[in-house]
Length: 100
Image (cartoon, rainbow, N blue to C red; front, top):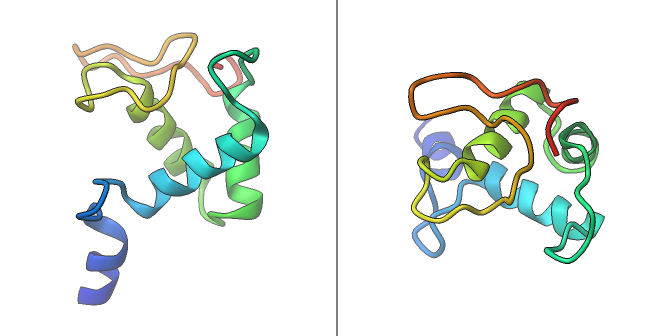
């Protein structure tokens, strides 16, 4: 149980990312999500992450993307999101088919 906590739940000391964050960023890089390219739907990214790298529920992966796109959640935004990704007041994000 302790190895699961250390391996998955705690952020890595080197970069501060959990494995699911690393998988999402890698999948977005493989998809070609760059700053100078058009946005892609979040459902597309979630589907690729689930299918190739993280075979668990889609809500966990989408919540990770939402958290990385919120300017108030992390010190630096890791994902440039377009759409409703929630607010600091506790409003939840829109469904993944509406966000990019």
